[in-house]
Amino acid sequence: MPFRFILSSFLFLFLSLPLRAATANDYYVAGFDLYARRDYSKSIPYMKAVVQLDPQNAKAWQILGYDYYLSNQPAPALAAFDHSLRWYPQNPELWNLAESIRARIVWENERNDIYPRVFRNYNIWVKLQSGVMASSLGDLPKAATAFSNYYSSLKLQNSAAADGFGPFGGLEVGFMLDTFNAWGVVLDAATLNGYNAQIKENTGYLREGIQPKMISVQAEYFRFFKMGRTRLYANLGGGFYNTIVDLSYVNNGNVFESGEMAGMGIGGFLGAGWEIALGEQFSASLFARARVASTGNIQGTTTNGFGSSQTSVLSTDPNGLVGPNLPGISGYKPVNVDYTGADVGLSISYHY
Image (cartoon, rainbow, N blue to C red; front, top):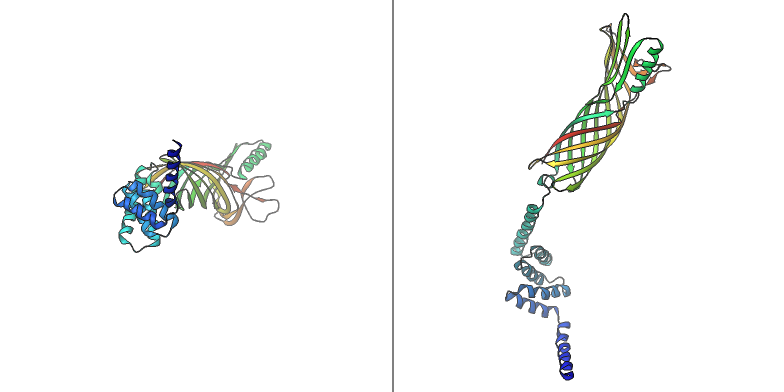
């Protein structure tokens, strides 16, 4: 028994030595012989040994690729073929086979990926969006309070309010940087209820109205997150804001001052949304944004009831009453109209 054990051990070590000392060519011959006999799974270790010893052996990479390919392992086959073509690109038949495998892998991934094609296959989108927004309106709420306090002190029946609620709409163009990142440009426009005040007297009434319209142009960045057949996104942006104010001062049904004024400012937003595919090239989303923005130096031409026009600045007098006043009057303060607040909306996008 001990003799047989010693003999077996000796034979094992003796037979192992040539394998350890084998050259790349030895492994290639052994592997190619197994490949020629269609024993592809046994050929693979030998060809892997060849390319470990001789990484630039294009023929060994090619045979290794065939071993994987004929064993129904397309991904490692493609990797092996790519290595072979790297060292010997003058092989049109192998190029064609590699490209067909690559296309098959892409097709299989596309077929098995539940993430909608509209989010994967297109780099540009055009989006229409609409919703409602609420904003602080800057100095206008203070003017409403000042109006009530001033005319209440005169024992006059009055009401005043500043309402920053209203509808908005927008147009957005976006560009995908990769599967998860994008940038875009968005144009938004909104009409808000604004500032409305009224005094009632025995002889009649006085109504004041300031309705701001917002237009903004902002650059934005998107980060997308896959969620099954839909996606979530976060976006932030900033840019320029423009306020266009329609003024209307009516006394007993007669307009005694009206006009349009405008002012510029800057702002930004932080938003989030949920988007779902609607077929091959359309999607829809629900979104919300928090916004910080302010516009000032609101001025323009106003016309009084006698047809006389003048350049005015939207400002408050020493009593805090708001209106179109001549610029530079001591004690008068220009009014800012802010859009700090939030909005929610729906959108539909076309991707191409």
